[in-house]
Length: 82
Image (cartoon, rainbow, N blue to C red; front, side):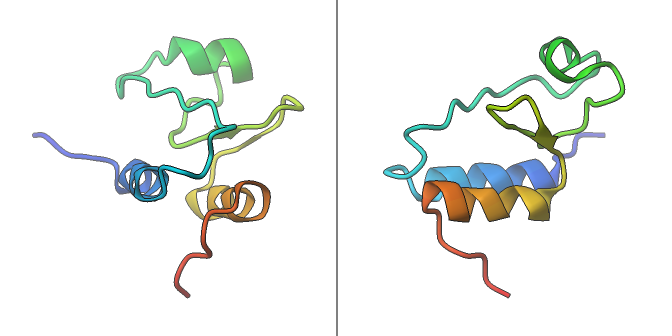
């Protein structure tokens, strides 16, 4: 069976819909299958969920709705429709 992660598709759609925003973001796309080595190196083995927003202070947000908030507040992306 082939499927997609709609949470990741949502983030991808938001990022690509506003190409002039987020120039200060470093977006890294990683392969779906686990072991997600890049995430393990940054966040530890217990935190491999996608999508994830890794913050400059070393923290991270791995909830799709919670990721949208800093994209709006910090990077100027529009608010999501209620």
